[in-house]
Image 1 (cartoon, one colour):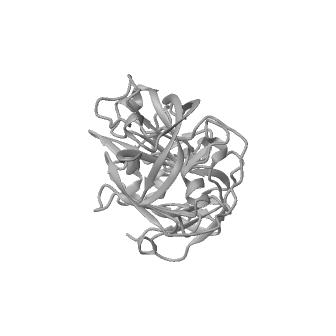
Image 2: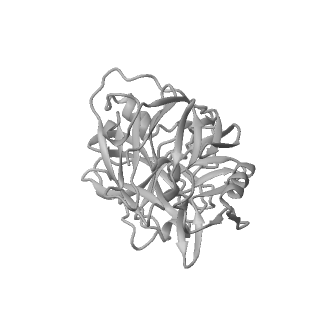
Image 3: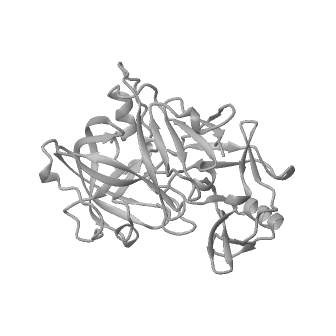
Length: 349
C-alpha cells in the first residue's frame, strides 16, 4: 500500500507455492477502470462483493496476494470507508479461520475468512475466499480505499491453501487467457488506467512486447534487470527486481540508487528518498535493459512530488529493488502467473 513516498505492499508472509491446473473452459476478458489517486500515489478500482453486490474501492496490488476489505465487524476502520456487511449477502458463507497481514511499510489488517461472490470487470467469481477486516492500522483507516485486491502468487497468501481471485478466474474458466494487462495513467493525462483480466489492450502501448521470465520462488513477480543507463551512458550492471503495482516509487538497490543520484546531482535524504532539481527538462531519461530491450523512465517522471522549492525524486533506495508505479505508468505490463512470465512494452505518449 502506498502511504508514503517510499512504501511497499510486498507482504511479509511467505508460504509454499501451489500450482493451479489449467481450466477446462474459457470465456472472455474483463476490464476494470482505475482511479489515479493523489497524483499517481496509488491506483484503485471498483470490485463488487456479495449478492446483492456492494461496490468497494480496492488497491490492486501485484506485490501481495490477499483479498481483504473493511467490514461492519470493524471498529477501527475509517468513517469514509465502505464496509461490507456479510449479513446482507445471500451468497456469503462463513469459513471460521482467521487471517492477519502486515505489509512492507508497517501497515496491517486482520480478522476472519469467509466466501462470497466477487465480480471483477463483469466476471463473476463464485465462492471466492474473502478476508473481512475487524481491525486495520491507521494507515488504512485514513485512506480512500476500502481494502486490497492481491494479484500476486498464492504462495504468499496469509492463510495456506487459499485461492486468489486470479486463481479462480483461471480455474473457473472465466477468462480467455491466464494473464492480466496493466495500464496506469499519469496525473497529467486523461485516464487513471485500467486492468484487463484475461488479455490486454494493445492500443495502450507501442512497439513489440518483450517477454521476460519470472522468478516466483518468493511468491512475487521477480525479473532480471540486465543493466541501467542514463541516456547512452551505462552506470550499473545487473540486479533483480520485483514488479509491484502496490508500490508508488521506483525502488532501487542502495548502490544503484546512489549511482543514479550522483549522475543527476540528487541528494540522499537518508530515509530512502532523494531530493532532485525541480527542473528536469534537460535531464536524459533513466533507461533499464530488460530482456535485451530498453525501457525508459522519462525526465517528467524523475520528479514524483514537490513541496515548496523541494522536489522528491521518483526513485528511492532499499535493500532490494521494487519496480513500482513510476516504472509501470511508463511501460505496459502483462502479468501471466501460469507460465510464469511478464511481457513489457513502452506506453504510447
